Length: 206
Length: 206
DNA sequence: AAGTTCATGTGACATATGTCATATTCGAGG
DNA sequence: CCTCGAATATGACATATGTCACATGAACTT
Image (spheres, rainbow over the protein chains, first blue to last red):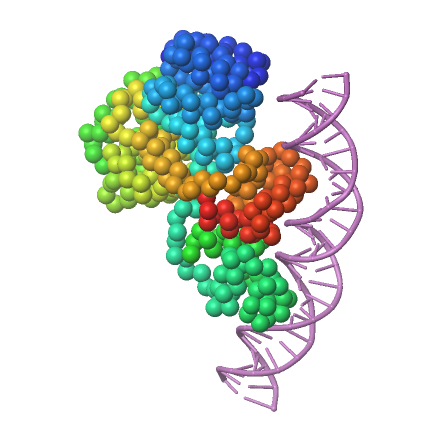
């Protein structure tokens, strides 16, 4: 399988190259330092698989992946990074990459991942996958049998409209202190930490 | 690697067993016909990996996986099925399985997937992964013609996930003060007053 | 009537948030 | 080379938020 390595750090490029060429079913056909170069190399070398860093100057890995996928839809892309940022994960998957794995894995693990991707599957590093899984859990809208009093629910709704405690107090004729107390109760019941999380929770679940 | 095969269909069990034992780094330590039996076999044989069908009598694969994961958290589970039903995918991931692959794949592809899982990664069959990815995609709705820098957008997203300034700072490697400054900028641009309103705005408009 | 529960209120406190003025650094353009 | 503007950082400050212990009174029970 022909592999293209893309990373802005020459050290990592070379390390990966050596590592991958130890395997006799892999061949490194080239390297690139950013997404733009990666795309150009794809035109020239037509690799089967691109191993792509995310954080790079000029053109980052997500954009590079999109570009490559648009023009060469048979080329597989595996994102390789040190960051487990949710936003990146989503972006990477949306960009069409077949894998998202972390640099700090043992090298044989990376190799196995590449093989699995070569065979047509998708591979996600463990922590990435659990992030995904928790994202999916959020999507579920369980009607929730929360036992909130009418007052609590009312206040939760107002928080989710973006009102401050003082505004809520004025709106429903209670003291600001009371609103705070209710907020504390809501946070406790819903196992959240602050009013922003309350608002998010309300919007996602009601 | 010691593998336990779980499927209610003896034919498939045997086929898989033969297939897997052709590989010299795998060893089939047992087979089971449903989730309950699978759990019992895990107690006796302590496999490294369980290859689990979903649709089975007595106890299905999702329940079986949950049970196994609860008692033996080092045992990896790969769900193997003919169905690409969204509900199953989500359930399977939530149950803690490390992989979800389809029976109609070429056998070497299945083997590679097992190896990748053995190395600690997660593997999803292509169509499963694209189902996941499309699930994620509809999270974004209208792109909005706001002129926010990538940084601002990134921070807005994190606020909308309910993170505090400090957490955001740690996540994207900036100082907390900088995050505050960005927050102020976002509030100014979006004509809002506090982070809760930012979160609400994001959830409603993106 | 005494006790209990619930909703509401208060004050003190610690921490988080938002504002602002002001650096520092660095790269693009003159 | 110099300047300009961005991205980032810092510190001081005012306000908002959240926590907690406790008080009050009304309604309900026994």
